[in-house]
Each structure stands twice: as structure tokens, then as C-alpha cells.
Length: 194
Image (cartoon, rainbow, N blue to C red; front, top):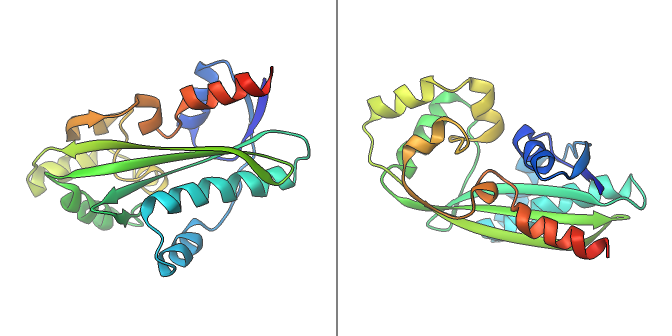
């Protein structure tokens, strides 16, 4: 089975590769900040924002690639139903970590599969994470281990790497937390291929 992945995420591609799903990467290049701001202005919550972004990415690429399945994905952090965006600077990354420090938040991963410019399937999966209580110095030590570009591209923590040390507990599927609820994607693809 071959699909198009409308995401530049190397982690998402690796999850597909690890599950023998052949994919071609075509980045959607949608303006995520513009879409988030528009949705926030309409009163959308983080879950709806995640779903919408995944759908917009997949339908945009799907419309340009007839008769192919296109997978779009998006993950957002929700703290007390407030959207926590990716940092734009290292200082902002520290502010975000201080906000998440010693608290429970949700990482919402949404996926959407489109064909011929229309959504044919979607799935959203929230995972619950509790961050340990750190001093500012400890948070800075953590941040110094992560390259700036990685922070800006993937957010303040990478659960697949250094980020595991930040958490008291994580309730959710590991692949979903890394950005792709692969079991549900495979279930859909297997039904689609029957």
C-alpha cells in the first residue's frame, strides 16, 4: 500500500516505514499559524484545531494528486483547554515549559486521509501527560540538549528522545504521542484495500 504523507515530520515517516506503509512525502505548506488564529477567533478548542489542521493539510495535497490517498496529521498541546503553540524562540520554549511544569496537559494527535480533495476518514486521539516539577535551572539544562531548529519544528518536548525525562506519567499510545496513531490508520487502510 502506498500513500502520500502531507507532513515534513521525519518521526511520522519513520512510524509509517516501521509499519511497512510505503509513503511519498509531499509537504502541504499551509500557514498553520494563520489557520490556528482564525479558528481561535471563532472560539475553536484545541481538539477542533488539531482536527482541522490535519484535514486542511491532507485535502490540499490530495486535490493536487488525483486518486491517491493522502495522510495529513497534526498534534497540539492543550493545557486547561488552552492551545499551547510551538515556540518561535528558545525563550518562548522556556516559558512554555514553565507553564506545563508540574501539571497535567493533553497532547492531541489528529490524522485525516483524503482522496481527490475530500476527506474520507479521520481520527483524533488525546493522550494525557503529567510533567514533573522542575526548577528553572533544570528546564534550562533540558533545553540546552535540544537543537533550536528541532524545538521550533517539533515543539518543546520530543517524547521519542530527550523529552521522556520530563514526565511523571504518560497515558496514551506511544506512536500517537509521537504524532501518528498508527493502529487506527492501519485499520482504515486494511479496510480500504479489501
